[in-house]
Picture 1 (cartoon, rainbow, N blue to C red):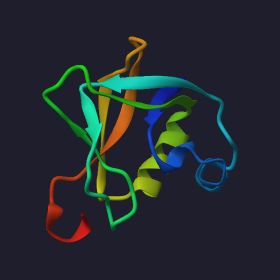
Picture 2 (picture 1 turned 135 degrees about the horizontal axis):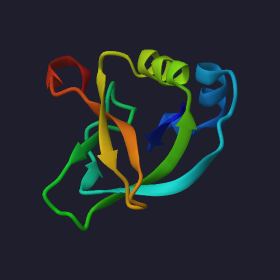
Picture 3 (picture 1 turned 45 degrees about the vertical axis):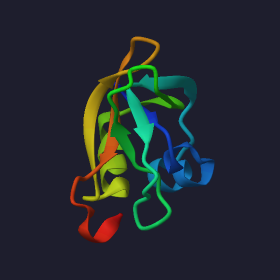
Length: 108
């Protein structure tokens, strides 16, 4: 059984995929409506996705089909600074995506 992961940042990079998953999963372009990339970045450099009220806003990225074990590896890579939620992509597919945690004190 596989799960879809929508990536909009570093998990689209081949070197990161090789490091995290031990392979480069095949992906296809997709988008996430109703979300935007925050002007703030995690640790000053990593993208943070956040919901917005404008349904016309979309974030472009790539959707990957991963095994449950690979999803667990992605959880470890993203760490406690991000949380995983399920969303509906522009294609109509359901996928997991990582949002930044809402504690802005030290990380953003």
